[in-house]
Structure formats: C-alpha cells, structure tokens
Amino acid sequence: MPLFRQLSFILQDDITVTDDTRLRSIVPTASYLLEKGANVLLCSHFGRPKGEIIETGKNGRLTPVVKPLEDLLGKPVKKMDDCMGPDVEAAASALGEGEVMLLENTRFYKGETKNDPELAAGLGKLADYYVNDAFGTAHRAHSSTAGVTEHMKLNAAGYLMEKELKFLVGAVEEPNRPMMAIVGGAKVSTKVPVIESLLDKCDSILVGGAMIFTFYKALGYDIGKSMVEEDLVDVADSLMKKAEEKGVKLLLPT
Image 1 (spheres, helix red, strand yellow):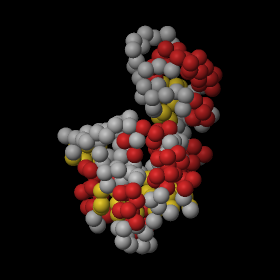
Image 2 (cartoon, rainbow, N blue to C red; image 1 turned 120 degrees about the vertical axis):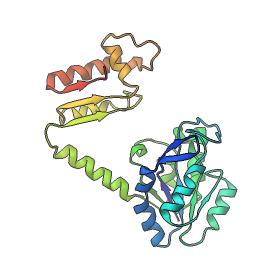
Image 3 (cartoon, helix red, strand yellow; image 1 turned 60 degrees about the vertical axis):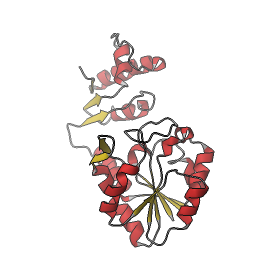
Image 4 (cartoon, rainbow, N blue to C red; image 1 turned 180 degrees about the horizontal axis):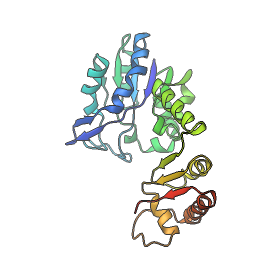
C-alpha cells in the first residue's frame, strides 16, 4: 500500500475549492497506482495550523478536497480525522484493492515541521511504499517528507515530481537567453545556495516574498516591523554585490 504525498488547493468561503490545478496534477501518479491494484493513502499538510486542530479555513481540515478528489479519480475517497493512530491504522488495513483514503492535515501535529520521529513512525505504520509528488516541499526535513521514508520498504518520486525536475534541469543546464529566475519565500537562509548558483546561470533574478525585507535592511531601508533575518543582512548585502560584479540584475519589488 503506497502513501502518496501531495495535495494543494485554494479555498473560497473556507469550504469551497476554487482552484484545483494542483489536485488535477496528482491524477497521473494516483491513477497509475490504482490501476496496478494498490490501495492509496493520500497525505498532505494544509496551511500553518501550528499544531492546533482547526475545523475550517486555510489552516483547517482537508475535508473540502474529498469531493473534488472523488470527481478527479472517479472513485470514493474515505476521509480520516487524523493522520496516525490505531483508528487510522485499522481503516488503512481494511481498505480493499484500489481504494483511496485521505489522511488529515499533518500539520495538526506540531512535530510535523520538526521531523518528529513519533509522527514519522505513525505514518510509517500505514503503508509499505512512499511516493512523493510534492516538489515544492520535498526539500523540507518534515515527518511526512523525510522521516516517514525511513519506515518504508521503498520510496519513489511521482510523475509530477519527475516532470518538474526535468523542466528545472533543462531550464538551468540549457537556458534560453535572456533568462530570469524568480525566487520567493520567507527566509533568505534557505535560499542563499540557490541564489548563488543562479548568479552563474541567469541574466536577472527577481526576489520576492518576505525575505525581501532582509535585502531592504542591507540597503539601509526602514523596514518597520517586517520580518527580517538579522544574522543574514550581511549575506544579503554580499549577494547583491556578487550579482553586480557578475552583471546580473538582482531585482527587488519597489
């Protein structure tokens, strides 16, 4: 039985999925597994509930995606109110061939983002194989992306992961000029190696997200109470100087 990691969607009025683009993107991998007779457990986080159980909204339960998933996969999806524990284990064991079960928001457990070994082991009890199709979170050492893999017979990447990796490798190794990269996120600390690598491959780099305030601080701007990584202000300054030396435009929102 595979544990399949990847769900992403946009909610309106806290309960209605208005953009199912990412949900549709999992269909090739999920359908392949189901056609091979596997039982599929769908696993994902949603928002930042920070260890709290939130019923609805952008940090809430995954209940809103049940109907869209059933429509996309063409079969019923059994929804659980937890992602580990005796009840979930029993439900997973009772699944028949080709059935689908959706686990609850993994971030209802505070330890998810800290790669908590207890949560990883709990997820590991549910399946034999792990398939990760969540390219955007695959780099994170979380329980549902890293720790759980230690409890599986085999770990694999899905078709969506393969597609995004091929595109990324092709764009970086054989870029069409001029080439611009867009780098976003909250923390400069997780993006330094990426930006340094892109300085040798791009003509311009557009920086976005909350990490721009660390760059603004390096430029001497008043950033008020905006999020900033004080210990990386000098690093941000160094990145801007390297970009200038290499003739690369490092662009910030104005």
